[in-house]
Picture: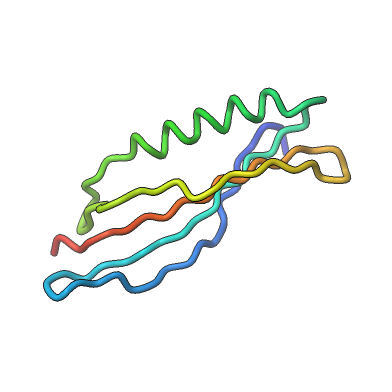
Length: 97
């Protein structure tokens, strides 16, 4: 696999319904992998990913994103040499159907 690349975690989904609408809370982790000498490029790319997530359209087929919240980020180096930058988000969605 060519660096850099991103992997999307399985995430977890829980009920976030209200009295009047069906809802879901989704927690998801995005992991960006890079093989640079230092984590400089990784940090720059992570910033672009954060910008892209924040720019997601709020209206989706059958759902509306009520909130998109950044939870945490961390960077670690794999003993094999690649850097991993993890970005965790929480999305809360309400059904529009």
